[in-house]
Amino acid sequence: MKDIGPKTSVLDRKIMTTIVHGKRLMTDSLPKVCFYCREKEATAPYVHAGIDEVVCSVCLKRLTARDALEDRLTEIVTLESQGRYDDALARLNVIFEANRHLDDDQWLARSIAMHRCAILVDAERFTEAEQACRAWAALGFETVDLRWLQASYLAQVLDALGRPREALAVLEEALGHRDPRYLPLARGLLRQVAELSEELGQMVAPEWRHLAEAVAKRFRVELPVGDTLADSIIELAKITRDLRPAFLDEWERDEGKGGRP
Ligand SMILES: [Zn+2]
Image 1 (tube, rainbow, N blue to C red):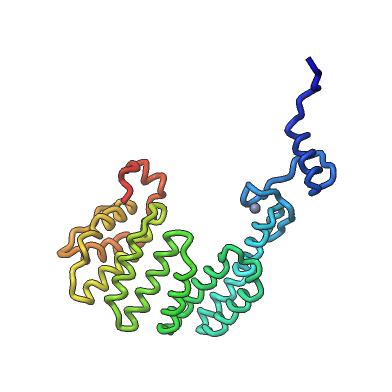
Image 2: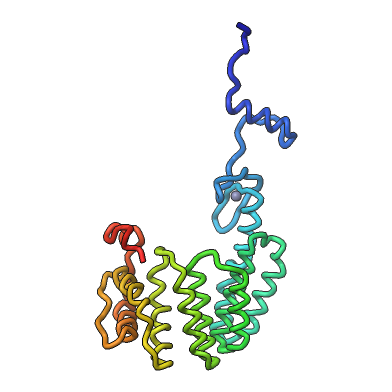
């Protein structure tokens, strides 16, 4: 039998591959994996706010865009609290224009859209706020909590613009999207549903009772008994105001996975 010598090790193969592809000179170690995604090869240092790691090029862009916004959020929130809304909005625009080339996944665009919406609601500039809310929605939502936050703002805006029926429809559509991780946040939207229903002189749709009961359980209380479902939901918001909801794993342990709404 022909001697084919020792088997090539994984490390040897990796070195051979990299030489074949001409990407790097001889190396005696495997490429490092990106600190953030843990998938791609780390190709650049990332040093920020006490972190000193190596990351891939995709994550480097994402992190640089994120830092550009987050490093200035305190300043923006301060301007907002001083009523300097246009200055706060201008800061957001500057950050976006300076970093949009890094925004391959539109994280920055979505985050800026969210802050614009929040600032305009706070400023009670409702016509502009409606546009901002809709622009945010057009960029899509990565998670249900952000979808709910947008719906909460938009409902507030539409109600202020004298369109409570549209506001209610926005909330009910958003509550149709679920993720048990964010269930405690449904409390605020349900309260808005209850208040808008009362304003419109109509009953809260009975389909929301099950969700309200699930939210109550997450806060380790029973849904209060009221004359109407709206009363129960408003009371639930009051009695749980200072309570910490159970974490998802605690809740699942108590309720079992079948308890998910
Ligand atoms: Zn990465």
